[in-house]
Amino acid sequence: MRFRRILLKLSGEALMGESGYGIDPNVVRRIAQEVKEVHDLGVEVALVVGGGNIFRGIKASVMGMDRASADYMGMLATVMNAVALQDALEKLNVFTRVVSAIEMREVAEPFIRRRAIRHLEKGRIVIFAAGIGQPFFTTDTAAAMRALEIQADVIMKATGVGGIYTADPRKDPNAVKIDELNYMRVLQEELAVMDASAVSLCKENNLPILVFNMTEHGNIKRAVMGERIGSIIRPDIGPSAK
Image (cartoon, rainbow, N blue to C red; front, top):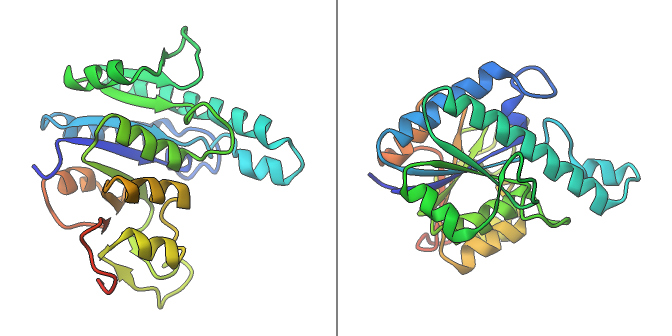
């Protein structure tokens, strides 16, 4: 297998399906089934999920809410999504742990790095919630930090398109897909992959980022098995890679 330990980054919007808001149980079940298929291969799987399907802190702050308060509300939304994913996975007989950066022991375990790694080693799926527990940081940055802390082989960033493009392919028919690139190109061209802080963290620690289409069934498994899907960001790619 190409990767033995992965961190899968899901947006909150991925859980709402066509509803436009909230959590679609059918979509959550489908995602859980795909994660289980990878887990059944023996891959150690961690998840970071956003909260944009319930509350977006940045949007609320633009509308006048205090940014720190808005970000804390967004963190709480990620906990709700994490519990929904846990429920779907455990109904498939997959043992999971929700690990929160904000302490709420009745709902989730507090984040302790060594304990999280031990859960992975024991075959449990770990779902990281509440970002890093601090405002002004996105769940992209949380994903990069948690991936580094658990020594993941890769961050797998789930999106609704086939990878990284020179423009949004849903809006620009001339957008060109980039199969391989390095971190500097992402930062210099401000490509919409992850926020700059997250990309910089990965760059400093040589952590690959695989961006792929989550809506195509089986893509997580294909990536883990070594099939070439999506777009890969890694340090050994030259600046002119296509």
